[in-house]
Length: 234
Ligand code: PGA
Image 1 (spheres, rainbow, N blue to C red):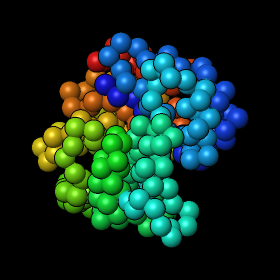
Image 2 (tube, rainbow, N blue to C red; image 1 turned 90 degrees about the horizontal axis):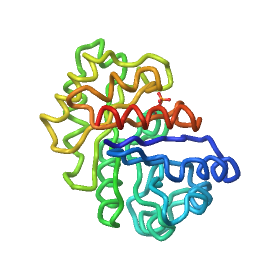
Image 3 (cartoon, rainbow, N blue to C red; image 1 turned 90 degrees about the vertical axis):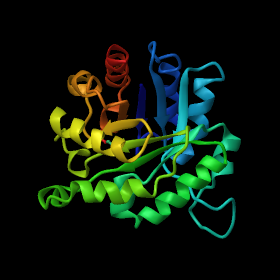
């Protein structure tokens, strides 16, 4: 059971340090806990967690080249050198707002794995795609480029459920997870408006192996409550 908090563009170094010092040993039995701060807060988070923390730190994105003229990008070895353990790739906000494609998701995932990092690779359909009956075709296309590796997990995040308060019903989540698992052998996290109130139900579904949590991961108490729900469902 993996519970990952995606902080998105929240928490500068000061806030990250404060938050991290409170979640150093948050992981209940059977749960791996990950936080994904913005790049400038990675080092402060790692430092505040310290070497004996059970919480691991991932970046929210990573480039595929080792170095070069790529203004604004960060390479896998740069993250590994800091002590960052992994990266999210292909988050829907990157697909929708920053031109991320299936091909760049594949490149990022391959490069991160090659550098020894863990990967959370995100997939999910938009509301229009679901309404047009294209959910399975979209998932099939997105999953087809994701490498198979023991350090990689997939996050199914229906785009219409992200940051909207609209959670997928347990039936929708279970059906999509089972479909993704029929295509790829990796564990599958659920993401999209996961909160302490719905975490127990979602995390106890047979094909849900954890959660990628945005908004509700920004508060220590709600993040802890979701981790506890994960432990109960594990
Ligand atoms: P949310 O975000 O929990 O705020 O809906 C999830 C995500 O984008 O990973």
